[in-house]
Image (cartoon, rainbow, N blue to C red; front, side):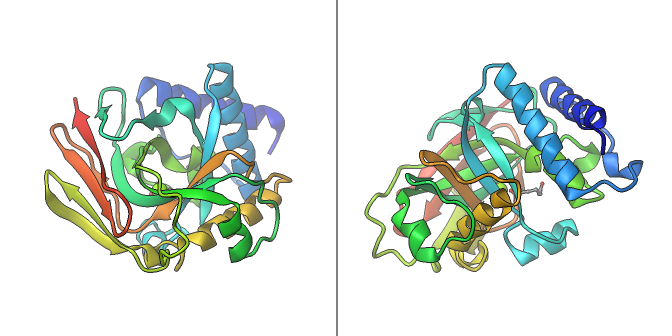
Length: 261
Ligand code: 0L1
Ligand code: MG
């Protein structure tokens, strides 16, 4: 794909997000839309957000469970980039105004304090991680009907990232079995989705390993001082006014967010 096309698509997606308006999937009419083009569009989109004054502070892995990949008819994990203005404080309020068709999903996040580059081991990830926390990700696709025709559509759209909430940190997690933590996402006190951390790449640490590998393919790394949302443990739930969404992850502290119009 030529440079001007990358810039044009990134700018169209940037405008759609700011206007809160969905658009047609690019792969409906683009031939030969490659994964590397999609990540270039994502990077250009982040450059536009930085020009708007946003600061990149985190990363997210998506499509980390086989179930979710099948549900969305997409074939492999992907990543996106998170900025400071996408963050909502724990126990804060998310306002629906300006969104398109937002959904929320339960995750676990890792705070990385030492750069992770290329092929890394589980032990290297764990020794580079200063804390973990429960996290809620608010997805919002800039495409009509929250549908994609290809991975390239989603990646270009910064992997549907919109907002995120980080729960209280746990620094001493060495005795916590990250591969088997029950996770309950409640809406107004009633369980809406229930899962286990094992659903996140079979082990959420594997998501971080995969992220380091995906970034390395573009000559990048997970920088020190970044947090990473490792992926969802359950399906996402559509957001509506008046919801209070809480997340309980076994052995971690609870968190919540309120939804207003
Ligand atoms: O975070 C995620 O797993 C979502 C990635 C993109 C697919 C979707 O929009 O559901
Ligand atoms: Mg997610």
